[in-house]
Length: 401
Ligand SMILES: O=c1cc[nH]c(=O)[nH]1
Image (tube, rainbow, N blue to C red; front, side, top):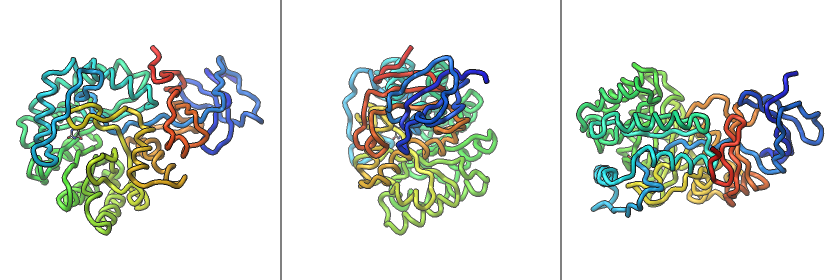
């Protein structure tokens, strides 16, 4: 038998068993009980010391281009009246003009996320009439630099609208040719004020290019629900179940329980996933109810020190804790659900191949000083080791170079 590259011993899996596993060519090739198994020969042995070992976190929604993490502090500017996406986008443009170079900021954000245990990520990147393809070109180059540390999907994101920002449909199409993986959208009703035409462009590009869709939908109440219905109908009509996500979907958190449940059933049937970061100042999708309906629920940091809010730490375990806290999750089963949202749920939404701790899967994992997953979700232990394809990429929050 050809020896594995690395034998990892004394790993505590989520079911409490102490396990050895070996990795070759970046994949898990064997898993056995530490107490009973004959160790598989390997070039190197790493003793994980009984730490909890979990799959790498999946950062399912972030903005690598517009974060000011590690840059000079940009004080938050409130909107004049309530939450207004147009105003936030204008503040963002102001801040971007005063920001450190985008590549530098993106690297700092990536180091933060990897240091905390993310091994895969989906980032939205502005592609519209205001910035053209410049941001995407920068982030594509940074993605290339980080390709051995984290897998990154990029969404061509029309932050200034598709119909409101001249040239955006063509730019989004070009973006896919350039290397973006998905096509995005933004509040078809309140931003572009034409749901049909907005979705024609998004799903038109998706169909033509054979890519997935991830739409930002901040619209509240029944307006947001109406848009979710339209997105679900398009998804079904194009046979895109499992290939479409809606990010934020605040409306699911502020309509009646009955309407949220009915819409959840619709989304489950259509195969539309929902991303929530459990934001602080308003309703957000009811995670447990949606999961029970069969909806794939996933999560991301979204904004980290940007023009939308000053919070965010790039830590998907702390995000699971926030989701659990805001959802009123107390039982072990509920805490495991919160954890699942940032691991299996996000992996499913991103359609990651070979995710999870099983033979044949990618050896992307994190060690945690916790006895089990519920304790990890409430305790959010630091001092983690992060492995990508079986190789140590970060320890104690610091990326290994
Ligand atoms: O939450 C966010 C962040 C950036 N851009 C958006 O449209 N929404």
